[in-house]
Amino acid sequence: MNTELEAALRVSVIVPTYRRQVDLARCLAALDEQFRPADEVIVVARPDDHATQAFLQQRARGRGTQGLQVAPVTRPGVVAAYNRGLDAATCDIICFTDDDAAPHPDWTQRLIETFLSDPGIGGVGGRDIVHQNGMILEGARRNVGLVRWYGRPVGNHHIGCGKARRVHVLKGVNMAFRREAVEGLRFDERLRGNGAQVHCEMEYSLDVLRRKWALVYDPSILVEHYPAPRSDEDQRFSFNHVAFYNASFNLRLIICEHLSGPGRWAFVAYSTLIGNRADPGLARAITLAFSGVAPEIALRKWWIGLRAMRGAWQEARR
Image 1 (cartoon, rainbow, N blue to C red):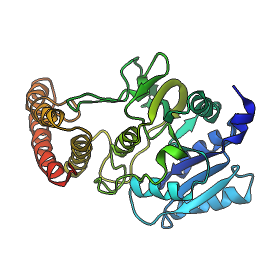
Image 2 (image 1 turned 90 degrees about the vertical axis):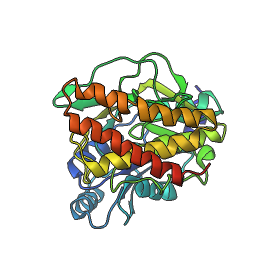
Image 3 (image 1 turned 135 degrees about the vertical axis):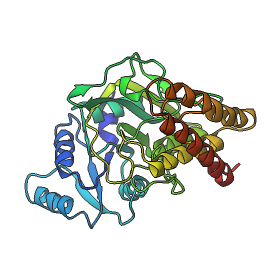
Image 4 (image 1 turned 60 degrees about the horizontal axis):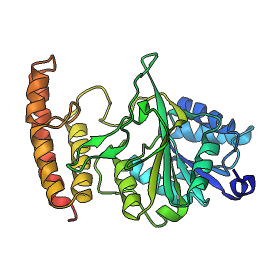
């Protein structure tokens, strides 16, 4: 690899954070240890998050992180934070990670090398090794970051294996974009939620694909991910009516706008009648109800999904 080209590419890292100063400290420590340090690290934080602001001020007075900047954002939600980070970023490669993640020391170096391998690559992502309840989520999947023709999303970014390959969707905890590919592109502020705004990186990834850039997933580009409690109604492992509607609405809005013609109608049928464990259609809800999941919750998820589909269909730009 041409080291002169590597040196010429400048790198921004955007880290949204809210009330997680212990996690943020681990993330910034990992960024300090990069073989190829970022040229700027942009921490997007709320002014009313006094503990985080105090931590960042203390860090700035000490050794600090190379190129550390604090970008204030007043609106809640990761979409506003991502967009604020994009406004502040000035470099050729714009990387994203979460405050509850710790990139491996070769993270930025591997991202740069992948971009330099092909000028048609607009985005690069990798695997997040998920730590949960003191254990690592195990598995190995070759199908990662895809949207099937009928709208079924395939994630698996945390258990991807094999060689680097082209994908449709990158994951926010471990993704980067070439500035040229995302110039003027924003995360969609129509997406619902007060915090996580689930699926926002799917929409952004698909927008990059529409611009005819390639997205690459390489499972050897690694971050350690320690999912922390969220500061909104979406608490990952407990059912919440509002959080489920928001996530379901976001997915349906994105997919309806991504697909056209037969694919869109196939998605309506698939999501209504089949779906998956996390977002069940009628058949999956009935199956879940007979396999240990509380019947009222399984069927409620299906009913909420119907409402979310109606709302997304009305709002989708077709």
